[in-house]
Image (tube, rainbow, N blue to C red; front, side, top):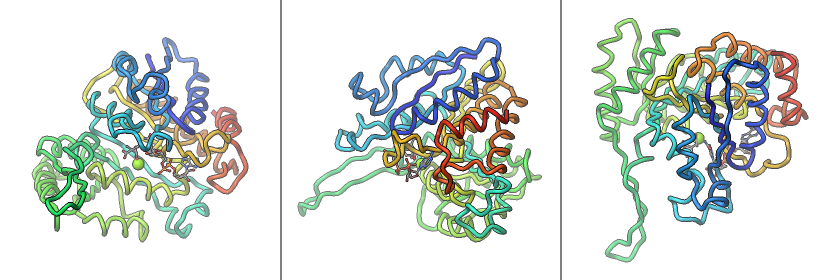
Length: 352
Ligand SMILES: NC(=O)c1ccc[n+]([C@@H]2O[C@H](COP(=O)([O-])OP(=O)(O)OC[C@H]3O[C@@H](n4cnc5c(N)ncnc54)[C@H](O)[C@@H]3O)[C@@H](O)[C@H]2O)c1
Ligand SMILES: CC(C)[C@H](C(=O)O)[C@@H](O)C(=O)O
Ligand SMILES: [Mg+2]
């Protein structure tokens, strides 16, 4: 059980610390933790947001627990040196193409949803976000047009095999849940999306037991707040999945609650190698104040135990402890309360 811990920037180290305490509470045999530098912190120390030694550490591990990267002081750097390249680089270098972002109501928390409680109560969905392609990884640049205007450009593309493999992940997930899959695209405008839709339809033939629906992303954004309970599994590309998952977090109640697993094909002794991180960022506005909600990172550690180590029982214990803490009124500042980062960590530990 080799776990690489990459705390990163801003609130990353604060929330990661609490998740590590929860992992250590189980005293699992053979669990070894080692820590590496990523993001702005790595840039300041090593001159690069994803130093070679950090990447090596990730490759040597069975799983990575990632905090967050992003530092406003680095926004003026050339793009390849910016903190965000650490997470993009890890996802690409480690072949982590399948990003699972579950969003589920917590009993007792309905009033914190940005939606009406009776609508929020029904949320139990999983966003399966493609993580290695799309406009994120296409060629990009800025150029000056003949008439002197500057133009920024980013190439959006998906190859059919990239769509096929994430679609299989989504159908398999749907098969193990409520057997409903919504594929989100913009096929009415984008060729990338038309190919996406065609490939999803081809793959669907292998899963007759799953009901497939296609939805344009603008409609999906609307349906997600109109009636989130209508969604079971959502499969979508890198960009749309990024946006819809932040939106889903506020349907549940806070971005400080949503965990994620990024998986590829590499197997570990008891599961799949993966990188686990909250869906939120480094939150520079609250960094260093001890006010960040660590629950998303703690829940990411639970996903790690489930997917990379086959430790379902411990994963469920963590998820139950978080749910119990919330049900009993433990609230960070993001949920209108005054429990600090460490106090929320303590509350989860007490309920494990
Ligand atoms: N995977 C990642 O590492 C990741 C993800 C998203 C954004 N980022 C980076 O983070 C930086 C800040 O981005 P942003 O402000 O757009 O998004 P953000 O997710 O960091 O913050 C958005 C808002 O949510 C709040 N918030 C986020 N997490 C919280 C938590 N755990 N508890 C309480 N409140 C929380 C913040 O205070 C802020 O008001 C940027 O540099 C961005 O690129 C990194
Ligand atoms: C930091 C950024 C590159 C990242 C993304 O866009 O994937 C983040 O927003 C996320 O959701 O993990
Ligand atoms: Mg995001």
